[in-house]
Image 1: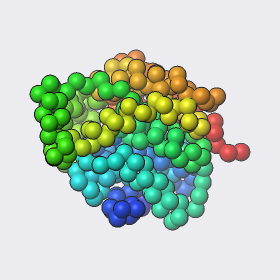
Image 2: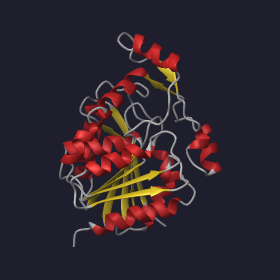
Image 3: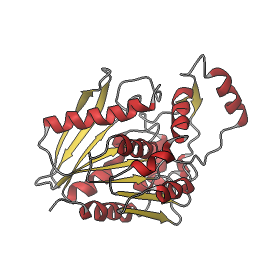
Image 4: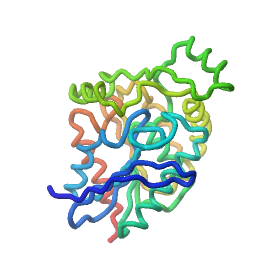
Length: 280
């Protein structure tokens, strides 16, 4: 399938240059914005892009600050609000440069956490949204020594690096995903104390925001996710006050639903959800 690809950098409100990609098929009917997860980058979602391009969706992606090809201290942020501001700035940049269309939002893991906060704080920007394996309850256990060290060092050295505990074999059942993840130079092999603190603090208040979300929301989670617990997704879903909401839990699926074996089933679920809210 032919498509037009535009890549480059856009400037966030604090001057940080963030990498973006616009994948535009001929005669598109809508735009899908995607927010990636922790320590990775938007280039890992080519299959996702191809599927939605073929279904008539223009796809917009960007690397969050400190990730992939974007500027910023690696895997570090001082305020959670900065992540939402970056998404808002990306939308403003993209919509100013390209004719508008119906707008949908999807996010994975850490990106799903950003998405849910954004929907609560910036209502009315999207027709519908999908959070895949959102980071709402951490399933991964940090070694006790790292936890103690982190508490001691954080006040004076928030940029201290901790080894990324991600086991690529537990992200997806697809061996190609495992191999590509291990050899991807844009994947970060560490996280920082600072971003960990920011994300944990946000988890302390995020469930209170569920009642404020007005955008139709699809939530997806694999029941064998060892990084973000599906129990957190169920809890958040149950607190939504939306008429238009849907929860789908997948037996036998790991954390990266959008890179899993049988991922086309997940893509189709998302497509059907977005198509329901396409303006007449």
